[in-house]
Each structure stands twice: as C-alpha cells, then as structure tokens.
Length: 169
Ligand code: ATP
Ligand code: MG
Image 1 (cartoon, helix red, strand yellow):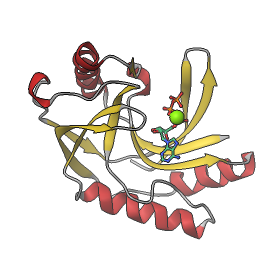
Image 2: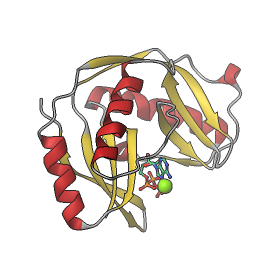
Image 3: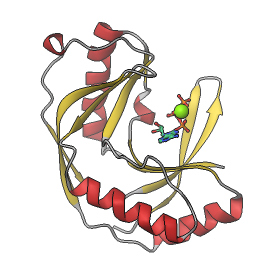
Image 4: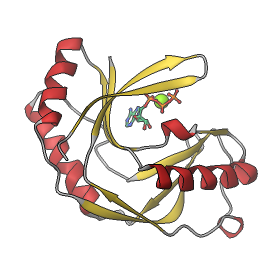
C-alpha cells in the first residue's frame, strides 16, 4: 500500500487552490492536479504492508496535533520534474510538525521522506517555469488541526487518494 501523511484543505481553500491551479495552467501548461487531489504532503511513507498501514492508522488516530495557521504567500517551482506550487515561509509551525512526525515514524521503523521539507501544494506537473510577473499574488491562510493518512492508488486518470485515518480533532 502506497501511503503518505497529508493536510487536506477545507472546501473553501480547496476551491481557491483550484482557481490558482487553473490560472497557473493557463501560463505554464503541464498537468493540473485535480481538485480532489490538492493537498500538502507532510511525509511520504512509500510502499507499506497492510499490517503496517493498520499500525499507522492506530498511531495517527491516537494523536492530537498542535493546531496551527499557515500563511501561503508565494509561488514556487521544482525544475525537475516541472512542478509548479504555492507555499509559504520555509520556517513555520508546519516545519516543527513535519519534524516531529518524522521522528515518530522513525520510532516506528519508517524512514519518511522528504528529509528536507519545503512545505508546498503542487498545482501543476510537467509544467514550464512560471514567470513571477504574470501570476497573481497569493495571500491565503490555512488553519489546520488534523492530518490524514492517505492511500494512493494508480488509476487511468492519475492517482486516487483515499484517507485511511485522521489525527484527533
Ligand atoms: P502521480 O504519481 O500519479 O503523479 P502523486 O505524485 O500525487 O500522483 P504519489 O506518487 O502517490 O501520487 O505521491 C503522493 C504524495 O507523496 C504526493 O504529494 C507526492 O508529491 C509525494 N511523494 C511521492 N513520492 C515522494 C518521494 N519520493 N519523496 C517525497 N514525497 C513524495
Ligand atoms: Mg508521484
């Protein structure tokens, strides 16, 4: 089972991310991430056996995160493989959250990626470099309190994500 931990945007924020994805797509082309798949990855766990997934679901389900607010205020680009994203300051409560999750996962024997965390929401894949001037300003706040353990499965229309567990409200 291909698993990752993520923050899932509330509906209104998902809608705003989708609008930014459409605008970015009109400038940079590539493959736009479907609305349903817009997320922030906290940790990619890779392929795990079923019993591991159950163990991880129990672990996350028993956890309560320190709620936080993340300010999204910038566009970014990963040249390889042409990812266009929106994100915020690299140092934030999210960094601490990601770090503590990785430590916990290490305790469970899982080497989660990435090691160097750049919090971001991928909007486009295989896209051209965005020229900053043509993209709208980003100024969004994301109040988060729960993380999800997500199963990622390949389909003909791209990956399908299914939440398996949530941290406590
Ligand atoms: P697709 O692979 O179909 O384009 P996807 O990349 O969204 O879709 P997954 O490959 O299952 O689906 O990835 C799930 C999440 O984990 C995504 O946010 C992805 O960027 C992230 N991810 C995948 N592989 C890694 C990795 N090796 N290191 C860090 N993050 C990863
Ligand atoms: Mg992928």
